[in-house]
Image (cartoon, rainbow over all chains, first blue to last red; front, side, top):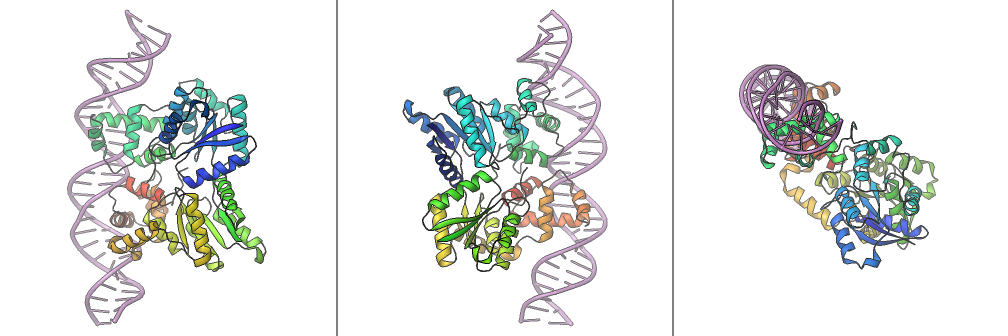
Length: 215
Length: 215
DNA sequence: TTAAAATACAGTGAAAATACGCTAGCTAAT
DNA sequence: ATTAGCTAGCGTATTTTCACTGTATTTTAA
């Protein structure tokens, strides 16, 4: 019996997926949580013998998003497998989740059958790679250089989050205690890396990447 | 037995919700669709006696979004009740769905119990108004700036959608075959109505309102 | 130990976004 | 028929954003 933990902020979706999973043979949902932090807290609290085999994580979550959650779980409980369940299929999202320790990636658009398959394969083989995760993406994971979805530095990520507000770059510079010119550098770098030319592009990217929840 | 139709582009969520609903007593899912157009096509195709009592609609959908779908269903089959199922609780979303014929509004964050309650009440009384809706609607009625008379016009909506791209206002003006100054007027109006001061604000708003799917 | 990156910072100028003031046509309201 | 409101339009000024050319320091890698 495969034990599963679920983290997603949308209760109806989460409960629905839980129902779906418990209908699959040999699978059961052990833990449910509304965000990454809650999941980790529950795993901390639960007895060691009751840990799940697989954690299914949404990327966009309040409090603690999927990336951070995956990273922490991967470090703290290396044996637990992680399956990312996301709305978007942008390369950067996939790569970022896989780099943070995810063993598979399924879209919310997918058919339930694919979810079942992903869970089974991760449990049996340790990973699940659909056509979505192409060889190209896997190759990128190994070659740290020359990938379009270059990993973002902490400062760049912070900057990107702050871009999704009505602050000017000058104000962002003050908040981050940096010179406006440095911020300008971040902007330019991101434009290059992400093939973007406007702040609007940055905002759209940040939302797709799950860095901010538009609420 | 309450017959239900479901429209949502995320298959896993949709199947999950369908499972959830079929677990509720006296409820069954008759039709499932990936977007509004598909739902309407299926309802057109299905025999008249097999129409659902209630349509549950997501707002953010490709092809045809929740607003348009609600409006069409409401006109074509006035007896069928509509329940909006949305990610966001912005006033404008709620009001817009209600204006387009929805009889209730539930968030994806909500507990499954609320969904059940909403379906039951809509079936029995014709509507479901949670504290969420009443509160928001009341707030709206008090705030002169979001009065129903100041809903967005078609042109403003089109403009708002185009804002979520890397186009300049000048380019948007060309696309819409209007003078750049007219576009400027739309922008200014929206800033006033929505209490916004930058294009970034417009983009964030448009996404929350489900006008664009960030893909 | 050099070379090559990554990081932080600087000035300038052009383009885009934002803020106002103003005109005019249409319609609805009493 | 006139007040009020909404839509569409023009002009101008300021602020913000974007693009380009740089420099100095630190880290990383060969």
